[in-house]
Length: 144
Image (cartoon, rainbow, N blue to C red; front, side, top):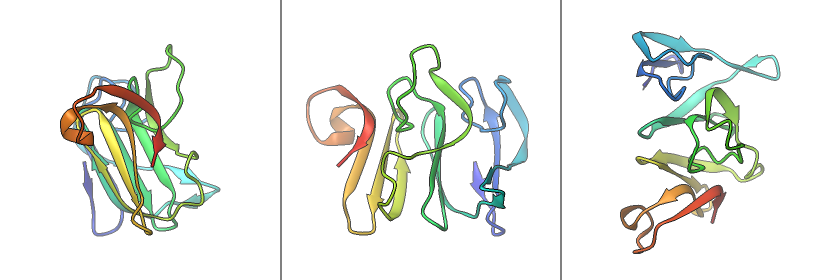
């Protein structure tokens, strides 16, 4: 996945969990394609992207956060049903609405969000390296 100088997301590659974000579950997207999605009938300007093993995040200029791909551990920050373990198109994350975000990051099966006030939110399958503890647990909604 790449963010162009024209604020467009290009994505291709393995897509078995919808992580490429082109509204399809095709196994592989061979050539880079522009990822297009609309919010409130206006074009979204993406300023930052992040990718995990099988999930992706995008932050817009107006502070909206979108996630898509594999969500079995809650790495998208979306409470999904067990029969819908992944999303093949960007979904707006609403659990932290009103919190201005500065930075987004993904690891293998987890995501982190850093607010402009330096609060850190994380969600997903947490391991020692990602949370700094020796426990393993699942956090399905971003927590501070």
